[in-house]
Image (cartoon, rainbow, N blue to C red; front, side, top):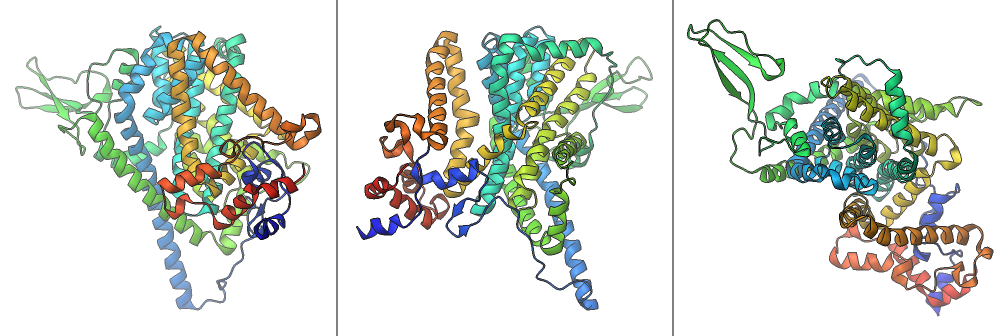
Length: 602
């Protein structure tokens, strides 16, 4: 009884879909009020007002100014160096996933009978992009299949939707490197989740519409007919120019092999590139070196010229290891470097963006236009995200760079959301320019697929950003962030379920046929929608529901609370990182008490 009285002193809480244990976190993601935390009424998503605790520049002596300037210079060099290695590690990580999953991804894309099913096309696009960690590679496979008449344009639309969803897995992986700090992990994971939730909501909304009326296909065909194509344009290659000198020394992959595996035209069993050019030798002793990219034969001095292939110069040149072994080696090394660089970047940003500097940067990044033009700030952020992604030529690098800045409270979730939307637009613009550089026989197909990708992301912005009340990814991302702050294993569960297990299950059902997919997936979808509807009514209109459905107290605890699952995970992983805060465990014990449940009225 004393324990129940002590628990009863807490304010009453209502039941929701996850249970009494998670109610306080649920309020943080669905209402504008500050969530009730263990330390008091503090909004963990609000950006703090940073105070300058150090001496100003005028108050420092000459020696102090020299030391502070030198420290700032060293921090800037360390930050730039860490960022460079971080980007290079992302490139090597993509190569590792391609070595590990390119054959599987090629086999998946090659089954054009399965791709004719819209649901199967969506999940195959997700799985293929997750396996190769490159939306550009997946898009190239789709373009090649459409150009080779192995896939129709209509069947390629769900695959492009899945490619767009799969590319958000990189930012999720990057956010998990900040799991050491619960507060930073809350914001970083919420930032990565807002991108994934937006992509999933857009895909699940437009997929039935596209299957029924094909608006994206028709719109892209209309735009293609109105445009006069000028082949030969190329996308800027700024980021690759900077990272290629280092990454080419580690490994080089043959991108044509991946595309060939998807279209069934692969001629080389290994993805590791062995030959990078040819050398022409003549009897007179003259020779010239020709790069493979020149596209034509080298000029010969006489009729006795002979070509000799030049080997590539990288770490795995001529290795006897299989692609799978090289992929695991690169995966372990790139993840190690990525986590180390990310930890160093976070430390340097935390020490640099403090006081006046941090307040100035945060104010500029999160600034709004004066009233009544404040609504234009988000659209300017979309343009900035699109421009930076277009310049970097990689949406993964841009989103992976924004996530740590959210963790250190420099960028708010509300400002990161339009930046991610702009990143989606920027990567489609780059793909459109790359499509214009395609051969003449693939030009029309490549441009139409790129236009479908562009209109898909544009439709997502119209759905989930233009009307403020429909910006559902923001509260849902806050919900995920709050849950992961209390139960860190939820991040791993979200990653596995969203990008692996559920797509694999849907893919398996699709292989069994459309009838099996509808028979199994239809009732599950109806059940999920019904649970969401009841949860909304419980929160806002409980009187409309029967008395038994006004709460989930009649369900077993493991169906309405994450606490039993957390105890199970804690037994398997007894480390401190996997366990919830002590206050959270005490609160859960209180809400599990039947006397407390009986004393709380709806």
